[in-house]
Length: 117
Image 1 (spheres, rainbow, N blue to C red):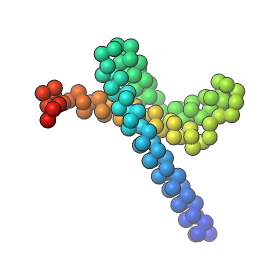
Image 2 (cartoon, one colour):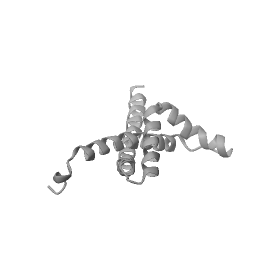
Image 3 (cartoon, rainbow, N blue to C red):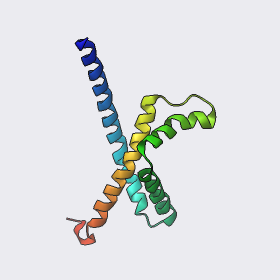
Image 4 (tube, rainbow, N blue to C red):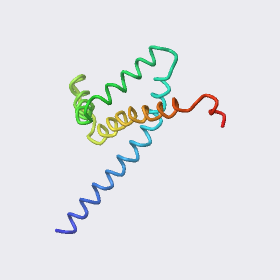
């Protein structure tokens, strides 16, 4: 009994570690791209990325998970994505929005003469 519970807990821990690593590896570069887009001088890109961040930060993660998991099956009447893929996609997009705000705030807080140093 104790062995099976421990085995299940370790499987869940491994899955959580995979989710964490993949989310971090996908969200950091995507967050940088979104941050650069929100600071763009080309206004449509800035509005689009700011709107994306506003929507991602304004909706609950559980709703985003449901949209990613059930959305493709409802739109194209096919099979939806797997559970792990839906989690990875939703987490990566959600945390990319938060990382973009962090990156934007960091880059906008540095004065222009301080860039070379």
